[in-house]
Length: 253
Image (cartoon, rainbow, N blue to C red; front, side, top):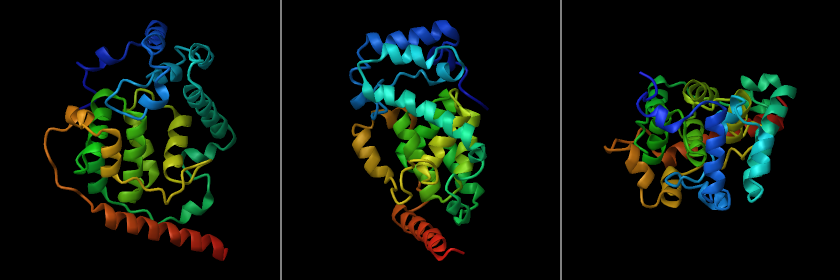
């Protein structure tokens, strides 16, 4: 089983023609001007969806840059993409290892059952499951939701960020080694300019803030599922694990 082959052609038009068409849609429909706000809401067509075309060289970052002067925030995302490539060039080991070496001592949990539930969108947390099912069927996931599902895997399940990176690599149409590595290490708190590990997303609060009408969730989730973890307990365990490596680093051992 793989991407929904009936759905994929309607979502992605490969080649330079498709890339230019996607850029025109982003610019001509006013999405650039509203990007700073709309990019956070998965039910809104607020992102450019140029990432597959940029990755495959079907359009250049320079072209996207010059067309999107109305949004400094979007241009920052293009720069972030270049930063990812800079990091991978200078620190090639980060594809498999954390940039911050203290995370080598992090007590990750190996649990195939929990990992499988996350991969298939069967965690019982609607915003997480919607994102994972969108990824499975379309080869794409909204950036806000990528952060939510990443935080859930790493901090609620305490499963190694590499497992998430591998799954995204297998499923994303825009899978890019540099961006994928940077993204997962950012969420996991172990990369360059990363979000601190103790910043743990509460899936329910993220859902209430960014999908308040459940429009996005209802598109992908039809049935309620039991929750595979208790978020409060999982958060406490994650913080305990994080504090253990902080103490280990301070001790110099």
